[in-house]
Structures are given as structure tokens and as C-alpha cells.
Length: 135
Image (cartoon, rainbow, N blue to C red):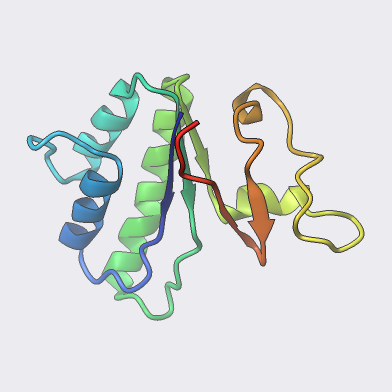
């Protein structure tokens, strides 16, 4: 399984966003660096892939960049619905799995077919990380 954590903090332009995506997700050189190309590449992934996002701080982003990131989130969600090899996690997705006693490191409640291979998922201070080492 390919596991990737993405952060766009400090990203100032669409070009920077797509360059990070191309590098992190190992998209081909012909990647078009736009939302349509992103959807196409995500929909075509054949390897089991989990993509997690660290919450970006839209208060420090350019307004245009912040809007673009939120639009991009919808593209990831739509691609996830289309591609059974893709699992996408935004920080708000995992808030429901917080331990009722207030501990942030419990993953006992995380289950289901999409989560079966993510036993190394850790919730820490409202964001999450995954071991990116080889399985």
C-alpha cells in the first residue's frame, strides 16, 4: 500500500500545489497540473493508496489559494468514490474516532474495509500520520 501525508501549509499558488501533488503521488511527467488532471490521475491509481491531509491554515493562505484547496478536497472525495483503490482522509474525518476518555491515540474505533490496512494510523492533536515505511 502506498501511504502519503500531504500538507499545503505555506503554499502560495496553484502551481506549487500541483507540483507537491505530482511529487508526492508520483504522477507522470505529463500530469496536467489542474483539477481535471488530478481527478484523472487519482481515478487511474491501481495500487492501494491512502492519502491523508494535515489541516492547512487558510488564515495564512492567499484567499484564492484557500478556495482552490477546498475545491481540490471535493476532487479527492469524488475520485475516492470512483476508485476502490483509493482512500482519502481529511482531519475532520477522524475526529469522530477520538477516544471518549479524551485520549487522542486510540484507533480501536477505526474499522471497516477501507481502514483494514491502516492499522498504523495514529491520531495526534487533531491531525494524523501514517508510517510511510514499506509494508
